[in-house]
Amino acid sequence: MGVQLQQASSDDEMAPVSDINVTPFIDVILVLLIIFMVAAPLSTVDIAVDLPASTATPQPRPDKPVFITLKADRTLAVGETPISRATLPASLASVTSSDRNKRLFVRADKTVPYGDVMTLMNDIRAAGYLKIALVGLESPGAQAPAGTPSAGGAQ
Image (cartoon, rainbow, N blue to C red; front, top):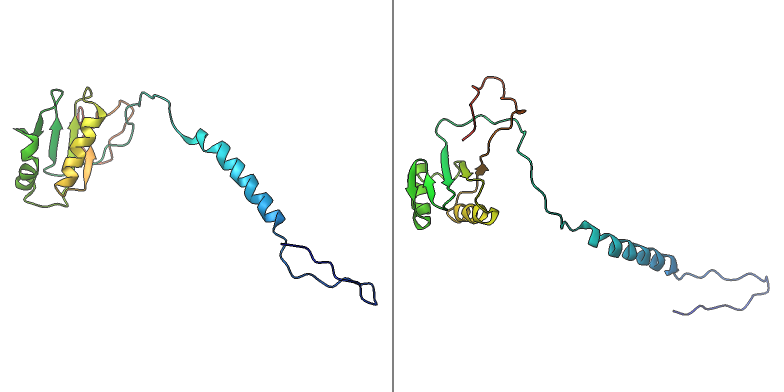
């Protein structure tokens, strides 16, 4: 893009140039690029964290909740019935009467690795159940909602 200087007319005035000056725009883009290049490495999380217990208010339980338990030895149980991972979809279908909108409660031993819990949740999703709740112990600071009986410890 070249600059064109026009010859002065008899009035010694320059004619207006209708080209857009993009130099300030490029300067702003380069500054933003530098800011994002500096900020991008800072946004990653590489810190090991020991997550705290939940202090959220316990939610009221349904009349007949469906619990899926992942024990420390990696065995599964639906309710109180031990099952294999291969029979999980059929077991869930029989317990929920094939109601895919029913909320399922996942309980896992605290010694079970996170990856195993995620694999179980993916298996439940693959079976067509998208409403999954995680169950944990209530911390001493959590208060029960009004009108619900206090459970000694959540299941």
